[in-house]
Image (cartoon, rainbow, N blue to C red; front, side):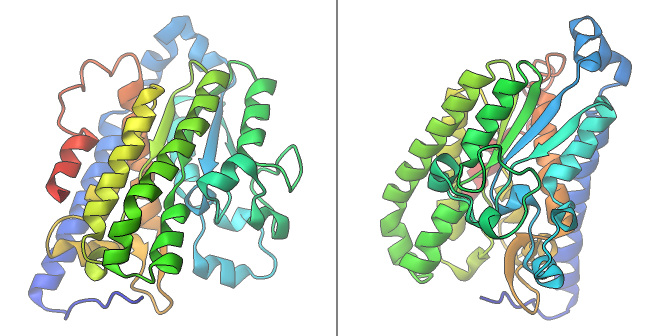
Length: 329
């Protein structure tokens, strides 16, 4: 499905400019204004945090992997995972390394992963092409089993953990079951939300049990189809609320991309063209490099809010995801 750009009038240019300005402001806020001084970070816990080797563990689907269809086609059939290191995991990892230069990234992301396959395996993409981090149990094992194995092998040294999952569950209903028909999607939504929420609860429960003190950040969904599917943004907001509630149940934080990818009104289409590949010759739901940086900024913001020195001072700052989502209901 192609989202055609509006005519190049003055209004279109202003819309794109406003969307870009909002993105840049958020990135500057998350990556610089909130960034604590290295000495302050080192002093927390008597300097133990800064000195102890730490691993940033990333879990999820193609977004965690850093995938885009154009990059896949440009490298086919030699799909070197290093070609996909411009995603939010690497962007957020670079941010973490400003705080902790010794942090390493373990990216378990698997393109095409669903909540079911993340739990049970296999990662179908990994059976055909190399992953950033090969699973210890082999190509038929699951992403969750590899994550739990890695945490067990590195007790107390894994954190933060990020995860994005559920988009492919939803896409199967949207594209395969419902053929983009809004009334069908609406009818299927309750069962879909329950399935995603139940599986995410299981996944996060296992991660929290294995890493009781790690900061866990769940990345929500955006709506790449925009206004092309009636009510799609409202349904995405409702699903994000399910994800946030599940995250909260295990004391995980939630990063909501919907307000930035799908702003209300005329700005939405131009913003989707900027942050996703939906307006290209071969429309692709995955983020552009700019879109991936926005996701990284949202995660960085939540990570900083979770630090002991920031929780209280930013509680009422006004950037809470629930307030953002209110405009989409």
